[in-house]
Image 1 (cartoon, protein in one colour):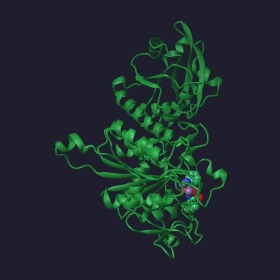
Image 2: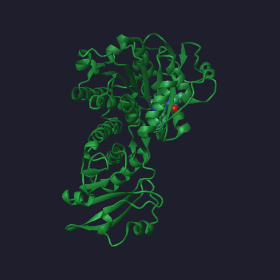
Image 3: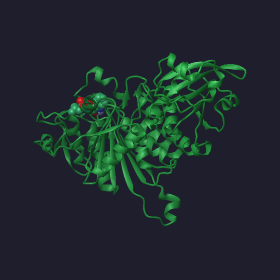
Image 4: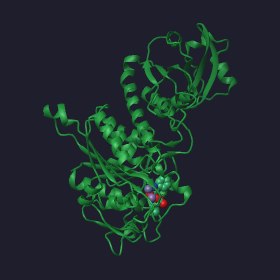
Length: 493
Ligand code: BES
Ligand code: MN
Ligand code: ZN
């Protein structure tokens, strides 16, 4: 479901604007502590705002809303006093999300916003997201939001436009990941990528199973071999130098390669998953969905960096033609790995893509994103992505982008002492650790590092935050699109 809420900004008195646009909802911020709410709307009430807040024991925390009817013009409308906490971007994002949930089924809201309007609008747009098959949701998202800030409407235009693009990209990532796997196979994902490329001026190359076999992409071929729906390698390129910049003779832009895990369903393969663990695995292409969504949004955000997105896509199915534990596969570039668990499939397809990127694309930096290990989810839960990096500056930049965009990362180590655990007796590497050291997320990261050719690289394991168990803040139940905001923030910083 694409973003449906229209964003606008206005100037003047909140109550007058509310009358002019016939808003059903007026949202007025309130802060914790003794500071009086700044609202001329108080004059329309028979109580002071302080009295109303005191009655509800409201504290001003972000996400808190105290509602009271208000007579304004012809009819009765609703005044929403909303908490904004410390007014940081994350507090305003949360506040916007709460207002969006409150505004479902209504047409227009006018909101005074005391700070970062982009974060506020992002919260509104993201919390309005709902994934539903069949009957549409009973309550449609708020149709129109008019924001008012001290800075005035001109200053709002760019942040609101940006919020729309970033939220739109996140919603696309969620839609792709929430799509059910009876529709979603590697070729389906490639078809979505072709549409995305056509709509956003990207170049695209999709390698089919014959080209993958001929090109030596043994990981993708092996993982995809159990499914009647063959694997694909999707390659999308955004190049800002295509037109104006190169003609102007500017310095060449940096080249970043993003790699996203594109397992369209993960049964575990012959190392079959138990049903409870398997039933969420339609979202095992969340990393790939994020990479597609990011590539699609770079142009609209005016990113000045060349970005190639690689999505190795395969269905890890259970069948007589599936790869077996003990099989040895040869990855792009010639490194071999012994498959000791067919459920550690993500690293096998990522290995091909990383090796290809390092050998053929001459990137300055490589970042991959993947729902890679249950261990990352155990370690950090649902609120942090696990970050691994061979470069401290890159790790710092990504962490900062995560904090700014509301998608937190936490760095875990690439422990050299653990490297011996992924040695194989018969191949270059084993696809799971063999020493009983634990640290499953680290082991997977160490495996991937072998394919990065010494190019500065970061790996985001988003198995935890890639899915939300319930509607909360700007997240809605199901796929979250985690990573879209942070990567867009980083690439346009
Ligand atoms: N797709 C899973 C990881 C996963 C688990 C994502 C839970 C989201 C939620 C991955 O392919 C997998 O199965 N990993 C195994 C690796 C193990 C066999 C070494 C795991 O984490 O159990
Ligand atoms: Mn798996
Ligand atoms: Zn998987």
